[in-house]
Amino acid sequence: MQAQTMSEETTHFGRRQVPVAEKASHVAQVFHSVANKYDMMNDLMSLGSHRLMKRFAVELTAVRPGHQVMDLAGGTGDLTELLSRKVGLTGEVILTDINYSMLSAGRTRLLDRGYAGNIRYLQADAEHLPLPDNTLNCVTMAFGLRNVTRKEQALKDILRVLKPGGKLVVLEFSHPVNPVFNTAYKAFSSLWPAVGKAITGDRDSYQYLVESIEMHPDQETLRELFSDAGFQSAQYHNLINGVAAIHTGVKPG
Image (cartoon, rainbow, N blue to C red; front, top):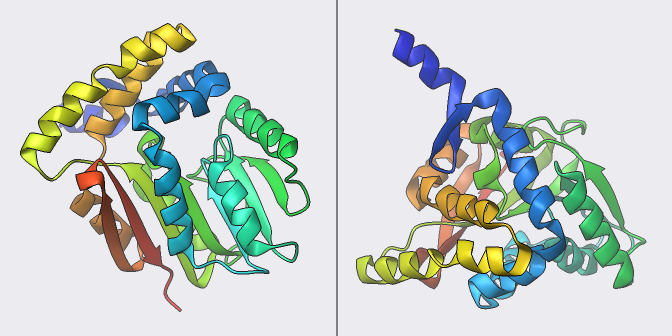
């Protein structure tokens, strides 16, 4: 009985077990540390492929002019920029992140690139979104879900704020399906902490990145989490042999 209680009160932070109440602060420190070099490191670690993945994810949203969209865990605003063009001046994109440093970096980047009129910024936790029910046409989330402590709770709250027929699109690192490719990918990703230290002076944050990918649910498990949260038509698309995957689901109605 005691073991079960401990299991309910702890969660993983990378490979470490930490109290549930502390994970968010650990993750916040990681992204506070890497915010200023986040885009550069993404380009290096993905060999630029993350930008193509994000474009594909935005195409899967099927958003159109006038839509209300949230880019959740939106970081430096790559998806927000693409979505802003889709929704036009009659729509709105809410760039949302729990981490102020990332949100600030995103706002600065987007303003520098001339994006202002249809974007607003919101610091919020994915598990407790400060929006009314049935508000949004679409929610996107790129490389953020694995950092959420209670993924099931976050998915349920996203479902709550979506309008009936609204869509969730989640792009996330996943698990390669080919064993040989998986071995090569693990060797490549093992270099990330050293590269992170060389560029940002921070090895630990990128070690967490590698470990958080290892601990993230596989494609089929995450699809089941979508269904369990109440999404219909839950499915996924593997990218680069499963290095990443895009999961989608639709709110009933």
